[in-house]
Image 1 (tube, one colour):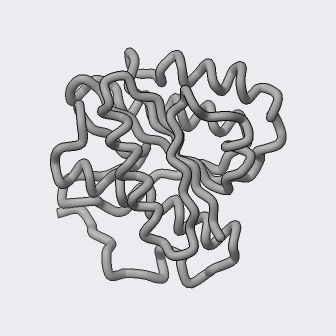
Image 2: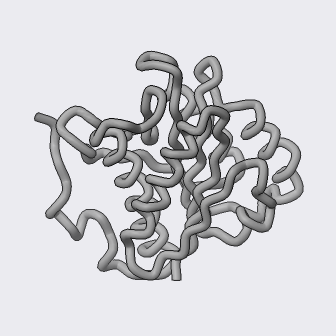
Image 3: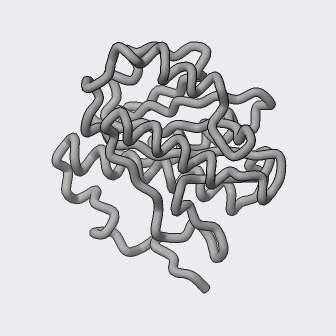
Amino acid sequence: MGKVLVLFDSLSGNTGKMAALVAEGARQIPGTEVRLKNITEATPEDVLWCQGIAVGSPTNMGLLSWRMKKFWDETLAGQWMKVDGKIACAFSSSGGWGGGSELACQSILTLLMNFGFLVFGLTDYASKLMTAHYGAVTAREPRSEESQAACKKLGKRLAEWVAVFADGRQEQHPLSKSDERLGPG
């Protein structure tokens, strides 16, 4: 059974709503166990438990939040070299479009790569104009169908990669399923 952790920080609740959608997407893949954890409640054991992790943070000046950074710097420091090879992705909300959410996702991905996580983004579209190349992003809460679809698609893809690489379930490989891939335009 694949194990996915959706770890998030949320001050206004917007990133928390994204996290719930990411978790919903991960649950679409049969045989996936999902934990949804706020950074204030998470422990190193949660990160050690999972095979795949989606990390979400509010965008703070184009970077991840200080609470998320502190978790990895201090709480997870003792787990260095114990999480190598786990699969990871990112998501972020900002106060408005152009607020740096994709940069925040890149800062999360950089942090995860330093811990040895295998990170990914999505090449397929969640809707006609919504991609998640660096992770799912939204301005404020994910109200639009497009933003919600991007969050769910990110979670689903994480669960697919966990199913393929951690559980050996090749039938879950996203390229073996062409029914929901959308191209630009």
